[in-house]
Amino acid sequence: MAQVIPESWQVPQRFRQRVGASAGRQRAMHDGGHLLLILHDVPKPGDDERAPRIFWRAPDGSFKAKESRGDGLPSLKRHVEGFKAAVHDLDEKVDRAKLAEEIYQVLRAASPLARTTRNLHKALQEAREGIEDKDIISLRDAAGEIERTAELVVSDAKNALDYLEAKAAEEQAAFAKKTAEAQHRLNLLAALFFPITAIGSVLGIELTKGLESQGAWLFWGIVIASLVVGVAVRASVNKG
Image (cartoon, rainbow, N blue to C red; front, top):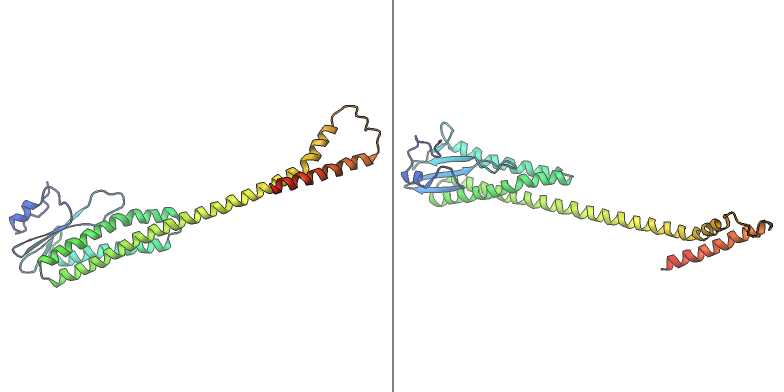
């Protein structure tokens, strides 16, 4: 099993006792001028596991980073810069997103990133409280700014989703209104022509009615009377 803290590091035994089989949460440990930083890498959407990043500052001010050769301070700075770049990338995606699916994907990535950045800032603040080091102070301040930006990205993404939802509801309401108006017009037309249709159907039955010998005036009279009745029915429907 791989050691969380490299065996070659001359760290206080207390650090090893406080670290289990896994790195655990992001935090800072102090002992006799030694500083151990347990941080997490930039999270990926849908990945529940957080890859640990381990940094050690000796009392003489030298830094070491696990899986990194030479001075570990540049590696720690790159680690913080990685969060800054990830947040900036999501911020640009929010500005470009037009569809709900695009915004959802940004929010899905931004939420764990904001949480990890918040804990990164907290761990560096803990480190600052135990060590007087200008580099730690600068990294702590940078992490605080990244945390604020990440929270703004999450807030902007949520607001964008709320806006799209409200816009879709507004468009649906407008469509429903137009549909109701079209249906109303159709009802008015049906009311207008219903009497003449009904009378025409009755008169079209093949029975001897005694009207066959009448002139064309009777036909037109029935049409006009039916239209008058249709207008009356239409007015009644419209009024209702």
